Image 1 (tube, rainbow, N blue to C red):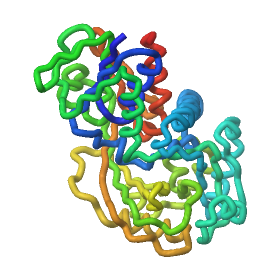
Image 2: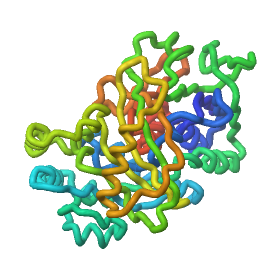
Image 3: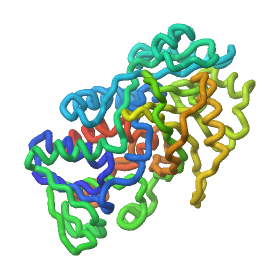
Length: 373
């Protein structure tokens, strides 16, 4: 079988991985020299803790297994089973963490409510003031800026994989066949359009009323911290954002404890992961209304710096990079992904939202199973 994958991001690359693993030949086409979208501009978190129950959690947990097994074979991914801590302050935040631990699926997530002392034993870099923390053992991390490169090198070693960069697919020209902007036709038994947040051009022609929207976020990265951040870290604003924390306690938090004005204005939460070079990736904001701003705003970075410093109990290292990114999200946010046959032999897979890095291995596995690869 021959599979054509359009899109060089993590969702496309994981579809290529599934096809090669099952003995098939793959041609992967990317319009840039390298993927440059959300697959690189993210935290690299394999983020189980905040996922909604049911299909979303099942997908995240399966993806977590797949990431670990792939990481054993591709060490360059930098897979690390580091878990996460969400420090809490005050009775309302504590109550939300308590409610999370009481969920029927808490054990599957690896939830545990720990004291501040226990949290510092797990992550000694957290020297700031907080009263307790929600620990999620199942969270993990990879290196987002280099993951696709290492995955592709492993795919090339199979002898059944070809990567074609700098080509934009413009047209479906038959069953399982597409033409790129060089005029070349690529034929296979199946075409997977994994184009991420690129929803114009061919995608719009194929699905004019696609139930997927684009979301913009801002992030930053620091110089090396000078010590190990042994877990990823979130703040209690993440309780407001992720569906796993829905509870009466969260309703009370939202009603009685407002977000900081900057955080509320930019729909913010803190997520923080240490990179292998020692720097910290920190974010993020959410912007949903089009057209998006073309510039990055400083107030969110100031807010994030203050939150991080309050947890670390020390000044943040110098900020070396700031960036914005855009990802695709199903307008029905309860859906893990939008998967649709859009032409004979052609399937569109997009819209995982902020779950793309976390869930992509399991999303690709489901596609492969449904298509009978």
